[in-house]
Amino acid sequence: MPRVCFQLQVKPDRIEEYKVRHAAVWPEMLRALHETGWHNYSLFLREDGLLIGYFETPDSVAAAQAGMAATAVNARWQAEMGEFFEELDGQAPDEGFLVLEEVFHLEDQLTRTDSEK
Image (cartoon, rainbow, N blue to C red; front, top):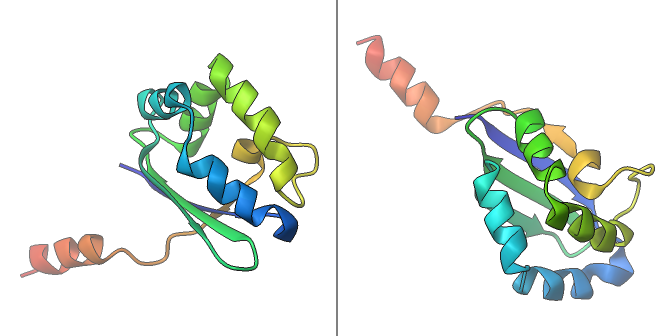
């Protein structure tokens, strides 16, 4: 299952409100994320607004994004949340994030090491 880590920048003056919004995400949005392949999804926020997200998906980032794009709730959520971020260049937050390259995964390396024995 692909693991995805991504980065966004929350505007410094919007950090507290961003936290409040994510303390009570709409139930319909939570269900849509789960149903479209956003599993084990977490967001981590640094004091300066650097946001790191992580999720696992059965197919690909593109498939997970396409699944959400097909839901009505995602359009509403992205419209409300877009104003919280810097440097999106007109994209919705779930399309404008920077995907980070995975360079190490403990279990993958352990599996390879164990299979070489």
